[in-house]
Amino acid sequence: MSWLLVVALLVGFVVDPSAATDHIVGANHGWNPNINYSLWSGNQTFYVGDLISFRYQKGTHNVFEVNETGYDNCTMDGVSGNWTSGKDFIKLPEARRYYFICGNGFCQQGMKVAITVHPLPHNASSNGSSGRGGTGAQEEASAAALRSRSAAWLAALAVAAAATFC
Ligand SMILES: *[C@@H]1O[C@H](CO)[C@@H](O)[C@H](O)[C@H]1NC(C)=O
Ligand SMILES: *[C@@H]1O[C@H](CO)[C@@H](O)[C@H](O)[C@H]1NC(C)=O
Ligand SMILES: *[C@@H]1O[C@H](CO)[C@@H](O)[C@H](O)[C@H]1NC(C)=O
Ligand SMILES: *[C@@H]1O[C@H](CO)[C@@H](O)[C@H](O)[C@H]1NC(C)=O
Ligand SMILES: *[C@@H]1O[C@H](CO)[C@@H](O)[C@H](O)[C@H]1NC(C)=O
Ligand SMILES: *[C@@H]1O[C@H](CO)[C@@H](O)[C@H](O)[C@H]1NC(C)=O
Ligand SMILES: *[C@@H]1O[C@H](CO)[C@@H](O)[C@H](O)[C@H]1NC(C)=O
Image 1 (tube, rainbow, N blue to C red):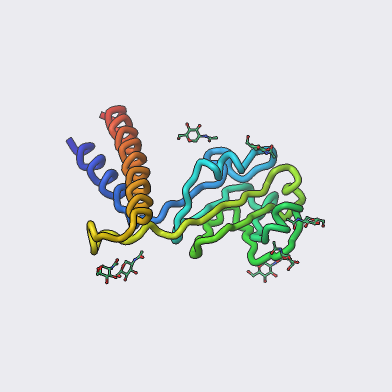
Image 2: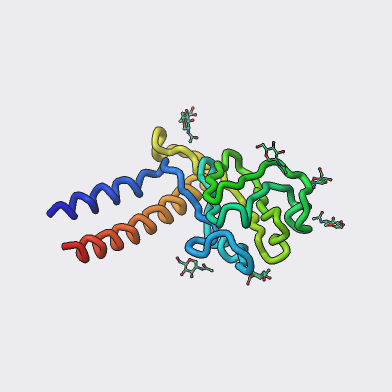
């Protein structure tokens, strides 16, 4: 019966709306040449406080944060950070566009990713159904729907995993 507890814990953890998400670049493909990272980033929703993480072979690749010019042209224009550990967790503290490229010449082979970080949905927990305009509440509702959908998905996965172990 202990798997029930595991599932309950997992769902409780995932459902927490204040939890930051770690977006693993390229998912199971990691940070490597010849991957279309626009397709990956288009499938993610980033919020302030989330993390983006890059997984790659240390020494072969790396990560530089640049500006839009650097991203478009695979140059170091507007460079503002670099990471080399092979497993880099980068905080996204601001709502804006972020641009990351590989600095070892592999940017030309697709190792570049641009993301848009959104502000946190309005904080309704304290004020519930106040009569503020529609857009904030709608944003919040859609974000909540998104989170609960992924929570449900993970819960199903957990049940499947638990079933396998029993
Ligand atoms: C990545 O995929 C998008 C959408 O299909 C496409 O528009 C874009 O040109 C692709 N980028 C590369 C570098 O192939
Ligand atoms: C985007 O996410 C959906 C749902 O998880 C998945 O079915 C789809 O394959 C993903 N698309 C890409 C390009 O990763
Ligand atoms: C990319 O580089 C070209 C030539 O250096 C420049 O004209 C262009 O403005 C750059 N792209 C962006 C988005 O700035
Ligand atoms: C990026 O940084 C370079 C160098 O500091 C600068 O010339 C360029 O205008 C910047 N590009 C953007 C889009 O801000
Ligand atoms: C990489 O970042 C460090 C600080 O974290 C800085 O000292 C160094 O100059 C940077 N290297 C490049 C090539 O930008
Ligand atoms: C939510 O509202 C409270 C009280 O107004 C504020 O202190 C807090 O920083 C807000 N949190 C977010 C994530 O905006
Ligand atoms: C909650 O509502 C009160 C009064 O309507 C407002 O002054 C306050 O800023 C609201 N707080 C948040 C976090 O929206």
